[in-house]
Length: 250
Image (cartoon, rainbow, N blue to C red):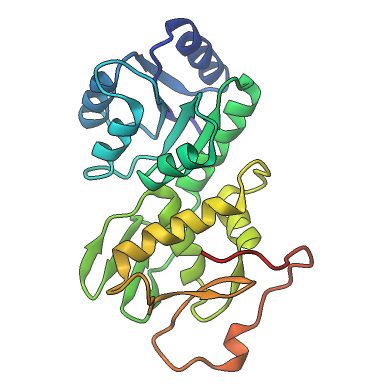
């Protein structure tokens, strides 16, 4: 697909490199060099994807991400020199859909961008009816979620996890299967990413996130959505995944 990608990177040389790689793949790129300009551009002309550096002047990338998630579901790929797990999980918790630590290769960055763009266009109206899991409605065509008639704002990553689970309420999905449905063959995305998205989703759809009623953990295996009825033993069957194994649950 030909996409419009906004690149927010204060290093003008690095931003130029990213822009040239994007154009080489047939995308349209706009470059900005501070967080305030990134927010203004997203509001004026929403991009298909935002590539967002963390360390930027005026408004840093994490604050940009926090502000955007109150008003936009644009997919966000964060670039960061901070490589500790806590820093990376913070970026996801604030609404980033993926992250890449510096230094990185442009080829890997393009692979991440392709993965996020594929996720954004995966569902189309012709083949994606509204999905229901109890009081939860997921509309893949419009990429909207509602619970008991109340709109639920989700990031792109959160929506894809929820949409995958909603295709078969009551069925257990391993983390690897959820990654496969949301990130394709992107082996560099970790299973911990799924756990972070699930934790954030529970804050949005559960009356008590500590005692989830909708998005359930199947310990040692993965996650499932409650269908709103008593669980039939057969509904908890695990789709074939010979590589799945025990994993610490969120």
